[in-house]
Image 1 (cartoon, helix red, strand yellow):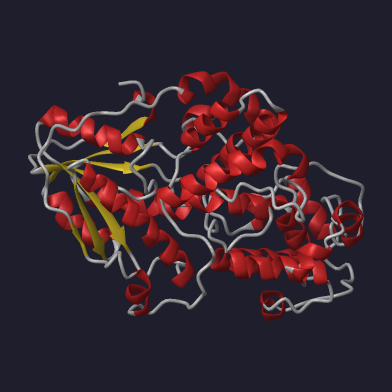
Image 2 (cartoon, helix red, strand yellow):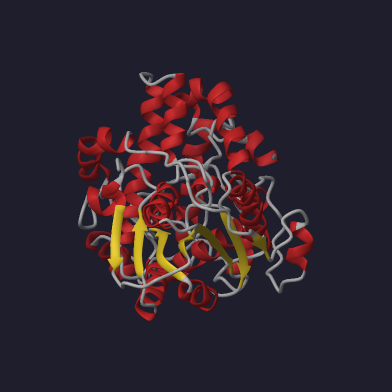
Length: 443
């Protein structure tokens, strides 16, 4: 099997079972899904059916109407595509632990997708320890498996880049599709995927209005194809300009595992592999994204700034902790775009309306929250709260690391100034000189 290095055996227990269980937890797609293919392989090997299980936990931390709508829209594609391959799929409502127990009791082996956030890793480790079944994790949401690229936190992009490039050819070409030979277990879903908003209204969810994106593989492909045909040739020159709207808008789909980064690279390479646009996109989606996953995977928690930041960054902030702030805003004022800065207010409105912030504006958004908060702990808490509540690509390694970059992570020291010390600062004036931003503010 070409992708055997992506497979990690968590534990071994010999037991009989009626099926191979694939707990689809992080890669909500059928295409370019190594976990799904390995589950098919084991089903054929043991001559028992494959059952795909998706658990919808409406009490999942920081989930809300917006994020669950996008998530369930993606499940509709998965449900239809799995059945089209004559493979059984169950979509069940409940907590991970409660739902899994009965399914594991009847399974011979369980496969699941590798996770990269410490809270989810801990939840899974608890589940594994409570169940006597052979379990495999498969790293299918990165171009190169996180623990193969490096066995430690990398300092910055320049330290991880050569490690990724050295392994790139092998893992870019390791996907293999397996033909399923097993029987078709009867599918079921406890969620009406044709009436998603009605389903969500039955739940006690935080009411964040839907964003203008539809979840799922089919929609991800449409957005990718539009990016390639209409925006890609201008990507390097325009990607940092909020007025140009040249972003790919694929990050929510990567977050929910609706599309594989391997498929994205394949699509771009067919169009143009040699241009500066390709290398610029590759830097963002592979080098920077996998650096972010490296960071969260090797972090014990994502709460304590002293443990998360480089020592120089934390030190310089605390040397300036008593510096006078010209403005200090509350979380409510941030959330409702009630600052003196219309450019910042526009970025917060974009987050609330679109479910994402333009990548360059996200940096400004974060830097100003630091500047206008009482201390860095309040600033970090505000950013995490706002991003995880409104961003479709929130609660993601990329999001956490993007926020922490505002505090100096994966960056270098600059000339010392008040409040920030040696951490990079961003000014409104420089944004206006670069981009103007009148159109951005109006939108």
